[in-house]
Image (tube, rainbow, N blue to C red; front, side, top):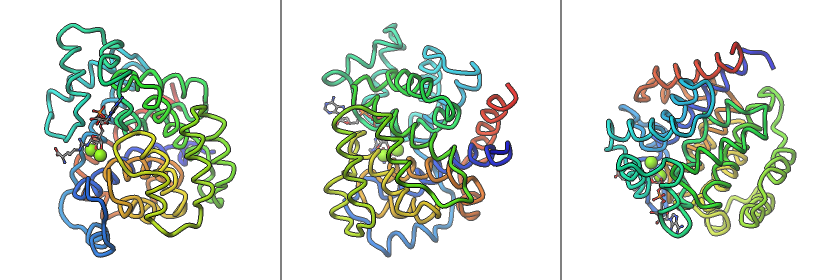
Length: 310
Ligand code: F2R
Ligand code: MG
Ligand code: MG
């Protein structure tokens, strides 16, 4: 793949995360979202304001850029610093508690183990993983290791870490796929199945296969979920991408139409779709209205430069 196509994919995945997040944010937590509500989101005017999903992805990108690769302690302190600056981004309950523990002297790689039973399996570490997915797209071993380790800062439960790894793998496979060719869904799902080993995710991937072509949204939500847990949202984002693999807007609006954790499922869908189709596929009207678009593009550009030029 030529370097310009790869650059477009890096930009597409990070801007795709932010656009999906910002579009889904206004209906987050609604059980159902009607066709009329989707249409008004599609036609939306005014600033697209992102939430914790993008704010944390920015932290991941900033740390990868500054350290030219993964440094867990640096990334943990970047999350803490960014949260202190903008605590109003709608964070889940867990991360701010962990940031407080780290500021109080708890080790950055142990704090998250103290939360919930065996750590969090929320989708907070999967929703922010796009920079890892694009940066390590061609190195599955390091991709998995960094997905796990970056997740562990806030989400220590195995299901949280595997959810982040599955989402990172989906982004990596989409980054490697040729955007001008039809998307090879079977190979994509096989690649995901080979990458994760937890039964919960294997079962969800089998459900994705059997749901392809299924337009009954209630059935999709029943089988894949649409809630805050990683295992009830990462597979839903992967499925949403597959329903409209050639249309960024189609995939993201479909994700939001499923209701539930709409900002996060749309952010994850946008990250995969943007990584496959590139920045040009994201509607201009959404890109123009996105809060801090230039800064997010700058981060994507820097990641691409480090990746391609060192
Ligand atoms: N916080 C929200 N949305 C609430 C409304 C925001 C509002 N619009 C506003 O502006 O204020 N969304 C964001 O949070 C989600 C990501 O959450 P994260 O970072 O994973 O948090 P946490 O606390 O780690 O996990 C979430 C919940 O999952 C349950 N859970 C996790 N692990 C568990 C375990 N081991 N046992 C039992 N339950 C577990 C808990 O209920 C956690 O609170 C995204 O949607 C993001 O957009
Ligand atoms: Mg959010
Ligand atoms: Mg959310």
